[in-house]
Length: 121
Image 1 (spheres, helix red, strand yellow):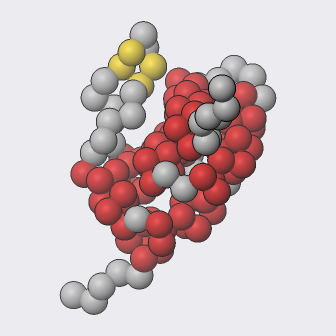
Image 2 (tube, one colour):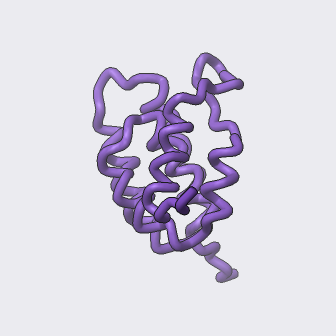
């Protein structure tokens, strides 16, 4: 079987995430669960950043929440501005769905983890 291109592999994993039902709900809001697809995306590492950032523009809120989670886990601070943009876009949606709230929450977590800590006294 021929190997998938990196972009095709990312797309296949994102399709799995779209089909995944959350296992955990907290106060009625679905929580991101580290599934095998998430672990596989993380294992692909930094080379997938361009694909993930591109998909932030068009993915469903559910997949976007997982994308944000993965971006935060990959730990590249160059993703802070795109994550801030996504967070603002989702904050500006009126009548948010449960997954749109998850996107905002995951953006907050990822941005907090990626921003450098101010070490001044």
